[in-house]
Image (cartoon, rainbow, N blue to C red):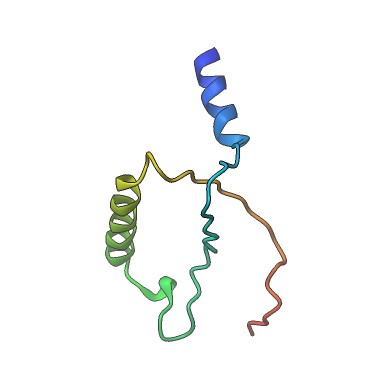
Length: 79
């Protein structure tokens, strides 16, 4: 149980590495009316996510992933 606790804590409270590069990756599936994630079929969504994961796994030793969330930062309006 202690091993699991340490693993969970290290994922919840990540240390930001002292590295030279930083990439902010805004996860927003809305890409306008012509390229909208939600209009794709489930098979196409699954294939895209698998490809995304395959690329990410190549860099698992050099990239630190820190996932955060927020609400209300978008000032554009969608009707």
